[in-house]
Image (tube, rainbow, N blue to C red; front, top):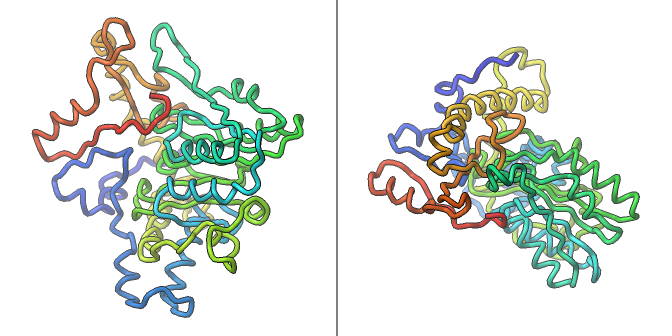
Length: 393
């Protein structure tokens, strides 16, 4: 059994901002940047603008790809592209895919995602006269809590047809807090797609997944996956995995005609100071594996160990919060959990949403901005209200 995380020494010590006394409570919106994040190092080591012949510039472009490839478990760093945000990367992906889309093609999109993995496919469908097919969450217990909903693979199976071209879904909904098993979903898509003669590619939103569990695109068998480094202790930049076969055969270039492979999706290139700033994330996560036999393990094995320890700690954090939100007192006050009513690490992430309803059980009694306003008036704590970027709220 993995040893418990020593949060004070193994975790908090890496984040200088936590020593200021200010409470950073906008956790799901973005993480703190670790002290090992390397933006300062690359700026100090080279004042030159981008040049393929400058050693520090090569390091600032190659090293981030190598580190991200480990976090994705990609077959090659050449399958990794960087961009300023996940929203931008998926928009680039959709535009690079456009030439291969035919009128009547179908995109299945899970409507429990952040807008980053919804909007680009909505716009691509409109431009190409393709059909958008929503994979909507279904109620689990509509009578007791209509907000307890989930994505069902039974529903997904019925949505796949011979015209299905893309399935885009979230590995973890950042509003429901629920896991979606990417390997299970991908296997279902492959099986049903084969039976119906469809050529289907899969795109997985890992933004709300990456801080909590290990990504494994090879084990999942997906063509595309992405996450935001600024939600995993890095600088404000995001990263996209594209399988080599898809880069070669499914995507046209958005860049200069002579740029190939992952560069197809990086028009103009990312800021290399910022991308180099992501290289501190992997060593930090590897350090959380603990000391037991770590020197004999691969990076992948160490990441597995680290995320196992993270999962146990997160479950400990969830238990008292969920205990209160599901208590008789909270239920009588109108509190309803959005997503799974569970504190188990195998069922949900520690991204917990809830509403407070009136006597009809559905009408919300107040908005999140009211809560934030109260804390803002006190000072010393950072919160932000939802700007409603979610399709299922």
